[in-house]
Structure formats: structure tokens, C-alpha cells
Image (cartoon, rainbow, N blue to C red):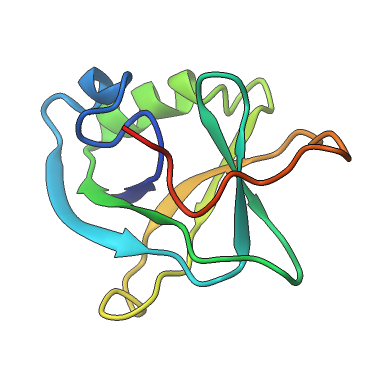
Length: 119
């Protein structure tokens, strides 16, 4: 499975060790349908109907056990993140890539942080 990562899982990120044994494919950029929020040590990708931006990240090929580990890290079962298809810009626009979208409410006064998570 191809997974888009945009925060602490990226090369050099604080949770990159969770990607051990997986294969980096390419740097990539989402379509401008998202905002990125600092959730206190890690980012949350939020899909928006308008006013979004393209988020920078990486595509990784992840095996089935790796996906299960990432689902655990991202607390998919607990409802913090949802793994879903993430639309990307060229040259990856026709690739089937999934990623983790933050699924809990964002505080109304919280400002988005820009288009990338700093490493």
C-alpha cells in the first residue's frame, strides 16, 4: 500500500522509526484541499471545502504489518485519525495513495500552520 506521510513519520521526523522496513517512494504534494494544524508535537491534516492549501509530504510503500502499526500509532481505532485516499498533485495525481486525516474537532480559534511540518 502507498501511504502519504506529512509529519513526524517523514524522514528525520520524531516518529520516523515507525517506518523501519518500509520503502520511500517520492516526495509529494496534496491537492489544495487541506489545512495542517499543530496539535502539540505532531500535526493534523484536515480536509476543507474551501480555502485549503497543498501540503508537502512523502509517499511510502508500506507492507500490511506496517499499515497495522501505523494505524495503531495514529489511533485509527480510537478515532483520532482516519486512513483514507489522499489526492495528490502531478506527477502522482493518478496514484492510489492513502494517508491519515485528523478526525477530531479543531478549536475554532486555532490557526493553520502552513503547508509542511518542520523536521
